[in-house]
Image (cartoon, rainbow, N blue to C red; front, side):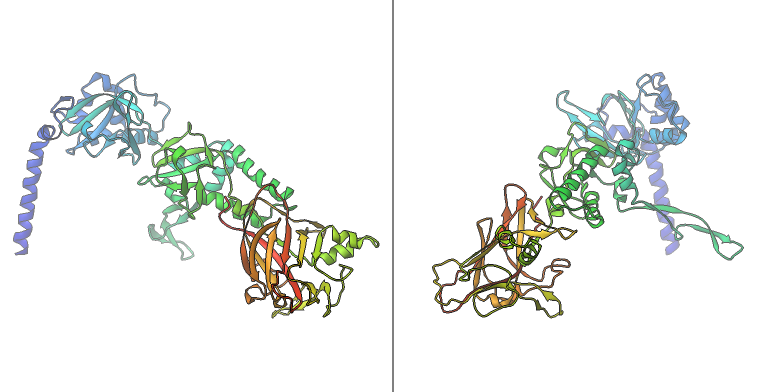
Length: 538
């Protein structure tokens, strides 16, 4: 039964093949006889018989593509007349073969199948773009006009005004950029590694040491390998050296002028990783002016077309997408803005560093206390049960010292209608131990606080006279942290959001204890207030 069945299949296939052979010359009658003139010759035969296609026909013959054009297979050829061909004398054999293959497609694509934005995969593995010229009311093949169509026995020939050059894919394009793009070019190429694939290699034997010798196969691998994939489309934004350097210089100036700091390696790596993971998008983005907010293919980084600027007249059409030339590259502020941690116990350092006779004046420049019944507002050194301004070193569960600014009024009769507050300027220490004004760059920040539970009552937080939030500082959420607070996260509590507008500069921070009854003393026991940029800053 199996033999009979197999014989039947073979007979059927032979019959089908004979039928197909008989119908090759009639194929055009069923597919597109209305397009141009008709010949019984196959495409290769017809081109060879036409004197005006001698150069093109010779290219097909030299590269062996004439055999493809004479196959019993329906296909399309994009042909060019003599005089319209570009000079190919300087091309290598490989380049000539690639050029010839780029003029052949294994599907009969008649004019009725043309469609604006359509991609046609050529035998070279590259994409051919079909676009509609609304002015001339005609379709263009990679920007070239059609000057005629010829129906052949095994397909169709479309005559072009100029030969098609195989487009580079995006990866090939970047790899061939000149030295004025070297910074970005070399960065992208550095991700590529050539990997030995023993699973694809053929073992030839062993050497004198017993090691297997392979007919070795290597394969390039990269996180950017999608940029050489010819079967899909991507968009890449490319900065030249001038744009790339300007981006980094802007960041260096920010760190130097605002943060009084160099750009450290950890910062550079964070910024570099954002750039390299943000510049590639899935799909072809041809209308950048209306692109809006985009999401990158790697890392899903936000890319805002209203901020990142491109030269819209220099969009490059690749075989697998498009490349835009960047004229301005902006690294989002949330990567650049630094946290500002203000520790009011720096009052003691100001006091200690000030010359004798001017200590009170020195601290009064930066600290204001309202509602204290003592006649002095200076470092006391020891906490007391009476009215007190001082510093209370305490220890958290990790047995690490915590300096708290302890501000307390012992007058239970102190009226609820009177203000009890502590205000101070955001002083910090630079890496040399000098006291400087900690500055905040305009943006949106999450505000955290660290307090001792003895703070007791609700506190109001103001920043630059702007109310931020009312919160209970005695809540465990705000339990004080260690001296290294902020290095590996935030163990203090979230207070609220502060939007810093205007210009870059220091902050005036105010904590107010608005107690509504006067039966207990009011106090403010604070370790620090911190401002952490959130990811809404772009």
